[in-house]
Amino acid sequence: MRPDIHIVDDPAAVVGELLAEQARAGGSIVLTGGSTPGSAYRRAAECEPDWSKVTLWWGDERCVPPDDARSNYRLAKETLLDSLEVPPAAIHRIRGEAPATEAADELDAALAGVTLDFLLLGLGPDGHMASLFPGSPQLEVTDRRATDGPAGLEPWVHRVTFTVPTIQAATRIVFLVSGAAKADAVAHAFGGDVTPDVPASLSRRVRQVEVFLDHAAGDKLDGR
Image (cartoon, rainbow, N blue to C red):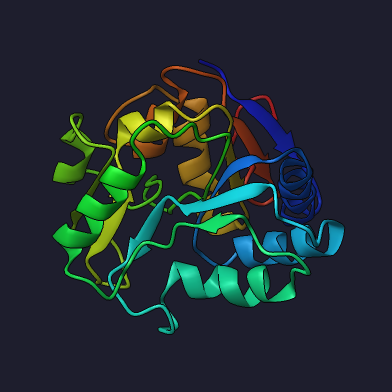
């Protein structure tokens, strides 16, 4: 399915406003890690400081303690949660400090029967989404909502991640990508074929995804 592409000057600000809109509406929001989302989270907290209608999840986590600089939870805590006037109704942190298989089992069980209303994802330079890397065994897991496995890129830390079916089942899938280093991955993931060789492209298999890019990240898309 063709994605809904938005090339804007400040995609993080736009996505931050979308997160704030979802916080007002309520439901479940899934956050991601990486460098770009922090700006979106700060914008979201500015636009809507009351997240009491929301349950919060993470699509993946590095197997590190929550105060580790590499933790996706820590990023969200410092840029979003610490700035809110009213916290989310529930925060489903992936326990990165626990054994990876145990943390994945906990996440898998917690997701049973859950509708994911807004799923935010980043895009790796190799085309990965969440912690689903090209050639990784995690890509082939279809009988679980969450799994674990080794990283495909730095930092070389074991990961817990949503599986492909869990991502595909989300009601709304939004990608936030910036920088020229991601331009090739963007072209392959959102302008090429749907293939496990580019894991992020698999998000397009069952629904239209929304992609918010800066001009550098979108530079190699055909017909931009």
